[in-house]
Length: 450
Ligand code: GUN
Ligand code: ZN
Image 1 (cartoon, helix red, strand yellow):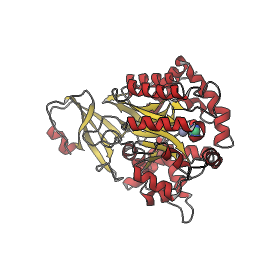
Image 2 (image 1 turned 90 degrees about the vertical axis):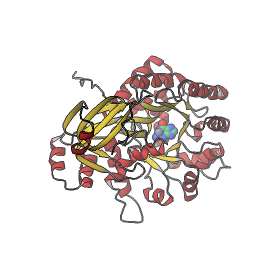
Image 3 (image 1 turned 90 degrees about the horizontal axis):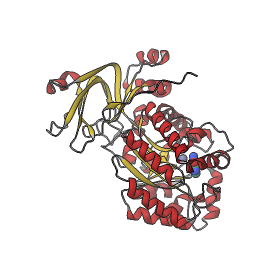
Image 4 (image 1 turned 45 degrees about the vertical axis):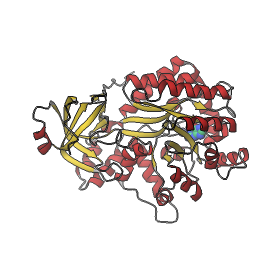
């Protein structure tokens, strides 16, 4: 497949390796090429994109003078897209609690207070972004904290690494401790507008209006956020919904007039295209239909749901309704940065489906939900999460022999689905031999030894 050989391409480069991608970006049909060629180049706007993809034997003839690096034994695949993650919770991973609300109260809220200090936020951001890339995640929709500085440092570090990232200041003006609570609702909304002006659309950065969840925002803050959303239709919205039964009871007490938890956001104008809601475990049919109608999407966070004991996302009901969803780590409720762990957990959760013998999600489907499907959920199809010509050149080089067991197991697979399954179940950061952002291999830091 040859996108174009337009003269404006500069810095054309060839990458010879195996290839894994989704030829129709809207479908979970994976294609694998044993000996492939990926051509990248810088377009006139300075962004490095994929120019062409195909079998080495045929495509290389069209690019006779292309400087090409061979990556024997490795397979190029799209960079992963994490639909929901909290960078300030990097150091909260693995904090056990009796469910969501005690976890927020005892660990998460106290920890997030530290992010009023820009130097602290800066150190965590740098570690977080490097860790994401080490795990092969090149785009994320990410929560910051209630402190506007926590957004500034994140955006600056993401910009320095030339990443496509989306984040936003958390809005929370009630039921939150001093030091994390927005004490002036009007100010919190002005800060949101200022951050949109400062960062949205700068290089590959995007802004997300970020009410934490209904219980920690007054109706005034939610409606103010909805008004901003109307003013900026191409800005994202991110929040949490229907994650935990105690949380849902609390929402019904706080918003008795709303039909459902989701309806609280709908009434505030926070349900639309580019709105991504984490969890969506306890939606009903009306909620799902409403999300489909407006084009909102769900960020399925299975390692978090298992760790906090929140419940199981209903893949069968979501698919029946045509609800768009993608996979997310939800670190630090989630337990791993690794997309392989998240895909594995999603498979495990679907196997628990009630009313049937359990649902077995296909490995291509799981992989798509964490790459091209997640990109589609973000309205970024054709930009990230795939290797189609025109996509931005963010990808990973997989080493299927990264561990003795991976080498042994993958050598015995006979189909693409079996091979992908082995990678999903046995994979972790060791499977990511290299991460490439904007056509450059990201340098790795040596692991700490003392
Ligand atoms: N609901 C409100 N805040 C949070 C959070 O930080 N993590 C999770 N998993 N759910 C939430
Ligand atoms: Zn979350």
